[in-house]
Amino acid sequence: SRNVSYVISGAQNLVKRGIDDIVIKDVISYPLLSRLLFDIKRIYLYLSLIAFFIIVIGGVWYFYYISPLDMKTEVAYSWLLFSSALIINLIYLYYIPVLTGLGEIESSYKANVLGRIIWFFLSLLVFIFSPSILLLSLSFVFSVFTNRYLCYFFYIRNSHVKAINKTEMEKKSTVPFIGHNAAKLGVVSLGSFLINRSTTLIVG
Image 1: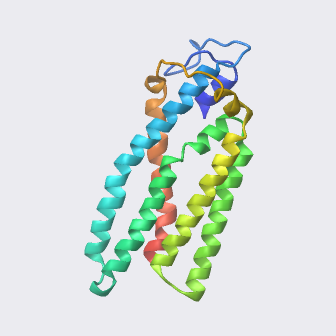
Image 2 (image 1 turned 90 degrees about the vertical axis):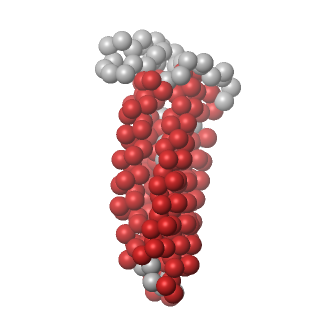
């Protein structure tokens, strides 16, 4: 979010540390912003591919192994659904820092809060009427898609995003300047997300 904020504030280049070497002008470099957003998406996609093998494939094997014999299939399918939603969530997790950097802080909070509310109420209904880890997983999938759709809606309506759609992207990659922080943020966010969300499924 910091680098996005710099660019929409007039930064014409990015640096790894500090701000002293950043060139500031009165105009926004939309080619740079376009490249920055492209690279952020790419980093999150690569992180998601790594997470897929660890969380989805590794998780299915683990939960299948530890589950009671009569529940192995249900548990495996439930984790497959739940973890797939986690990966989808991670792929599009960049929306939160990007929206914040674009000045859409309120919008990012709205999407996040609504997703959590939907997850809570659907889980509550499942616990009351038909306790099932498969249904809990489905309710989580629905909340993730709702959250990410709202983030996408707020993203595409932003004036800066509309502007970069009409601009040719800068050829020079911004990954050397943002890679470390973006990867660290993605890993921390995923870890926090796993801790907060997987507890309900495991208890169920």
